[in-house]
Image 1 (cartoon, helix red, strand yellow):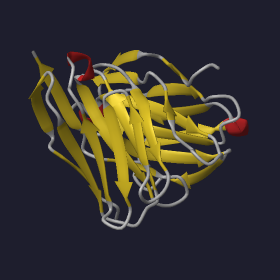
Image 2 (cartoon, chains in turn red, green):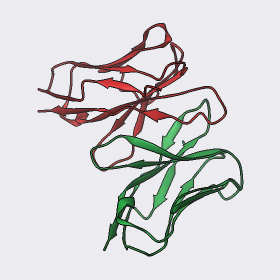
Image 3 (cartoon, chains in turn green, brown):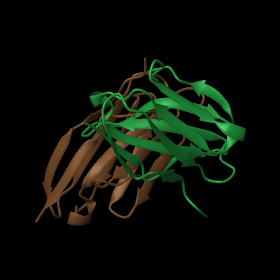
Image 4 (cartoon, chains in turn purple, green):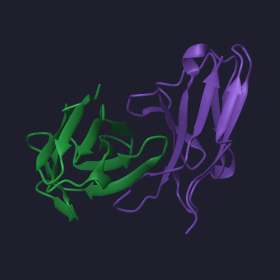
Length: 114
Length: 110
């Protein structure tokens, strides 16, 4: 079974530029998460989708971050404009609606803002 | 707001020794996960604990959940170098929202 796919793996941009990340969840998984992990910290939830609806985006900096999940499958996360403090690994995860509901994570995108 | 705290934050232990990592959370939950993260890698699911009193074991790792005390433990038996990694607990409170702990960086030395 294919895992969660993310691209790109690495991205370096200058501050005030924009960037987009892509995630393809495990087939059939209704729930999709985007997490931000700053070096040395635990992952912080940015946004959670259930199918193509937003369940929680309370920690998403909406003035610069946006996310969408078209047709309840793939998702993109965009940052515009980027700040230095956005340097982090952006992790996408998905989970099914079954009992265990454990989240499976992709490899992440390491963003460096210079 | 849910708070998930782990201790210790950093653990250096010798091979062959036993130790326990603790995960405390502030709001009632009956679902808790443990993940492992190697440097520069993503998170790997280790255990899913779904009810009070749940105990799961895999190799040298054993996880348990006490929902009344809002506490989960990850016990390491006879540590080996391959267990060196950062371990996270994650708690679900509502709508499958997964909140992660601060992480425990484990270093196993010879």
